[in-house]
Image 1 (cartoon, rainbow, N blue to C red):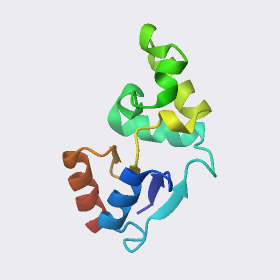
Image 2: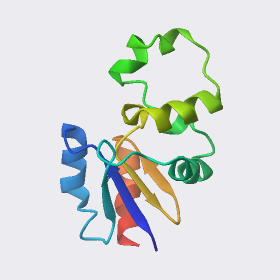
Image 3: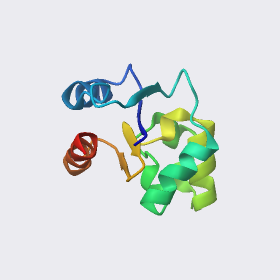
Image 4: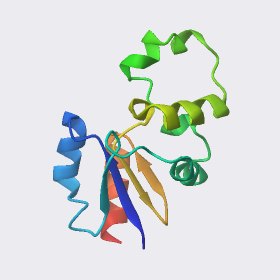
Amino acid sequence: MSKTFFTLPTCKTCQRIEADLNPAAAGANIRDIKAQAITAQEVDAMQAHTGSYEALFSRRAMKFRSMGLAERELTEADYRQLIIDEYTFLKRPVLLTDAGVFAGSAKASVEAARAALQA
């Protein structure tokens, strides 16, 4: 089973969750999304599990307001392109497996990612 953990090493939340889950020990590839950009294929694979690009999009990113996106009505195509163009818009960390995708720092998402890593 293929497992990839997309993270931003400078993000304290990502660091905390990575230390907690230890995805490398479970055989996951660790990807620094700033050093190695997310591909359109990877974003599409994530969306195939969530059913929407919006579910993968982080409104907490500083650029969300600075780019005036808070005032716009964004489409699924907009969310997809923004995530591909700018790593900061990916809700992180993300664990992508053949069985599913687990995005963000919500407790339920982290617990689901833990279960997926142990599977």
